[in-house]
Image 1 (cartoon, helix red, strand yellow):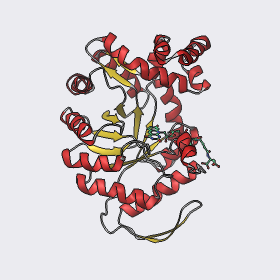
Image 2 (cartoon, rainbow, N blue to C red):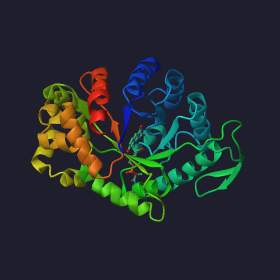
Image 3 (cartoon, protein in one colour):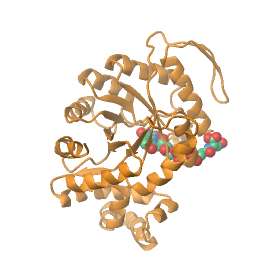
Length: 326
Ligand code: F42
């Protein structure tokens, strides 16, 4: 069974996001994920507002981190979303964005251990437990939330082998920033290794995709190209190699960026589009989604740009793509 989610950046007003997420809900999308960066709107505040304006869609941070807020603060924040939404909160957490932390003077140490301990503390506190905790990075003498007793599902944003294994070991799901089955061969191997000894059948493998759908293929491609240009330029050499993108194409793209964004977009190739996006008409997208499902993906997160016209794209997902997936 494939589920559908949708990602929004926290760089729009709460009203705009609530309208789009309500429309996503009406179109059969089951999860809404809001990104978390300190310089955007606060993702928990947005989720709480959106909770009051929606009724069934699950609402998650996609993803928060364990460095800019303490674990008990994270537990209180997600439990608030859970209370307002009537039990629809999902806790997405990853190690966070290293560059931002450097600017903020936040020490980015022991990401695996920090995510592991934070998840444990958040789970126990949101379950209503009173805890004392003596970890390697978190130390709590005595803590208990004054409200809520519902352990929220935990999804881990993961790319690296260690983080993927950790997600398999402790998560209810993972959010993997990728759009192509080749990336999921590797991710599934790591997730399954991490889950050894656990029942993996209910684990939700999320593909956090760059997605663009429209009735016109050309328009869908044009909307996705800028995003694909950024993803390609930011991908490590092993990922470029994994997708068979010729080195000269990659170099042409990164050099064009020095001249300007418009120039860079012109150098995006079909190989890059296919490696880093789900893009095209609804039929094109359905074909690519089938391949991801075959690779073990269980949730497609429709991510930026969504489409040249986002409302129209959400409608196409709801009316054409979801029904075709059975
Ligand atoms: N980051 C954000 O800041 N905001 C977002 O909204 C966001 C959304 C998001 C959605 C999906 C997704 O997959 C990622 C997303 N991210 C977002 C990025 C995310 O927070 C991470 O930056 C990204 O997933 C990269 O993480 P990673 O899985 O590659 O893990 C890093 C930490 C890494 O290097 N991992 C290595 C690995 O193998 O997984 C291992 C690192 C390691 O071994 N560390 C040791 C340890 O103990 O942790 C030693 C390090 C030490 O300090 O000693």
